[in-house]
Length: 338
Image 1 (tube, helix red, strand yellow):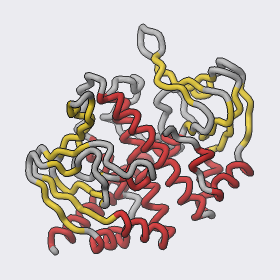
Image 2: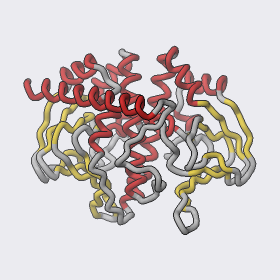
Image 3: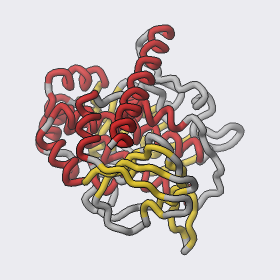
Image 4: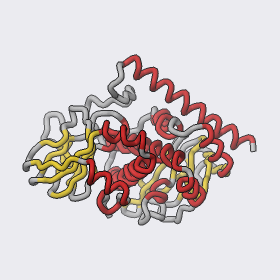
């Protein structure tokens, strides 16, 4: 099943988009998104088709995918405040909805319900995208690995939560330890818990042609099981996790998390926002691993670009790192002390 905004978005979000988005018509073979330029809008395809392409030095562009009705484009740039990962070209005459980033940000400040719905929808869309990317990696020979990955996980997930959230998660969770070579999760099994990796690391394995292929590594700060929580048709684990060191995991019941999200709108916003940022970064990591991330995006410069000056940006990033690290340490201390 492919992601379709018009089939997955709730009524509140659909009504807001219909009222506030700008409907534009674009001719065939027009460039909607240029990978070399900053993006300031999210797009939702109403009719026609788009082609996602990646520039390749001294070669023809690489076609990554074809997008049809209901496709959403630009959400990763919105979440990460960074350049798009690829260019998007119209394959036919299209109708598309355009929503300016600033319009969304302003609306989120005054409309908690809409904020929760949109961050959740972005997370769902990125889960679909990552399922496709996992398959691409499974059939590739890529060896890419980024040792700075845990830092980004800290920033994306734990900086959006507050201390009250951390204390609640700690109270409602349990600590589980897996030894080296243990399977933490088995592909195809029903998942009743969402996990956070507190220590250690494990291989993410995808069964390809009856063989397990490593498509990633789960490390400290990683969230596991979010896809089965977000996508109704994906109740079963889409990949296996095999410990390559001893791994300590926090486990929280999906039902408990659902109840909290439904009862506490502020928590839901913070949780889904952190999830959307984390999944955006994970998708970019995978694109890099597939060697299709464009050349000037360098992971040793985790540069969340914005309208701030460079020195202000560095201070903001340092603050996020400090906040996330403190929250993660708080969570670990509480779990290990019980």
